[in-house]
Length: 503
View 1 (cartoon, rainbow, N blue to C red):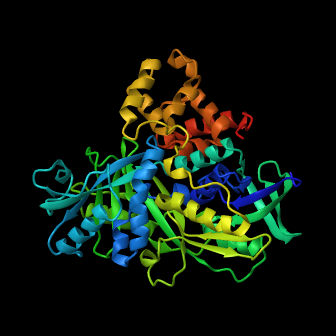
View 2: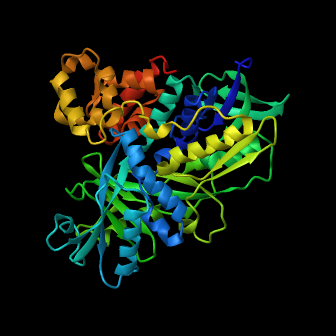
View 3: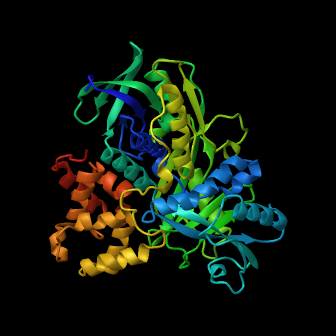
């Protein structure tokens, strides 16, 4: 492999690394990507899962970021209408709250008009005494504002970018750790180790992109040997998932007395997702776990709004992640910039691009900006192309989800409605490739629990690099919410006997 000289070698298989790799290979660059764990196993699967402009960022005057994010919402929705869909947010208001009504109105006016909204409906005002959104809430709120944003299956968005990059010719290597990277004879020489087999490999590249997320400084220090690296501020965000708190399809945006906000979002049909927290984090990002303090905070904050309190014993799952924010010296974690910063190092031969910060919503634009810097450093290839593209399975009309479900049920009449809906939400038009020639439910093989069948597991191993039960249950799908520990263990044992086949 060392004989092949890649144009670009990307470190990091989160949304930014996979997005850059996909954009670059689509323009004609030769690309390799190494991710030390599974795709989206860090920050990119630990978000609040919103495709949003960031209403609260307006308070911190981040107008460029908000405008870019607002413009991206409908572009991304059209790219991936299976894993991204619009969501209405209800923002309850009561007099004496921390933000006056005029300020909220101004923010929502900017939100409606900054970003070229075409398909998403505009802001409206609700009478909470008559609107169904008021039913689960305490009777404190007579008025609410309702606005549009989007929802995304974040981990699937990452793996679909990786899949598309591989389909276009990129060398995609999960569970591959970069041990060292050094400049040699005008090229980068990159040493890697396969964390499963222990195999060492050597690669050469004209340019290196460090998109390691929370580990970006660690890579600079360990792989490059630069001891002074300190560019990111690590901020922990934790979420709780509880049994469904309300039947409405809309989400809630709650303002807390401490000036922070949380969301309560319909999740996976039967659950409600509540988050997030914001606190500085100094330990190893792979060890991040929700704290008792965060659990109490989220339960108390939600209970201020819901008639029926949220209690720690109601929690069915939690997840935490570390956001690698660019360190701009902000005093509070929630005030640190959510914007991204791209830093190019090295004139002439073997340049390095370090990627700091970023968020799900802006990953495509971050990738385009990265390609501008890559083009300036090693020569431009191809034109920007991703704005009109589709992620794998997303090649159907932006509002065509129901039609896709109907089409799948016509071809596979044995599928239960919930099962068909879940398959289209995960795989879009690729659901037929997963189901193949199946004529009855028994043709899908062993049932592991919920509606997770052997055929789906095989597809995820062969097409999406899944290797462990955790990859399937918590990243490729969220079936972990529906399987018992015993069922998850059975799946792990089954997968351990399967060959790893994706490429």
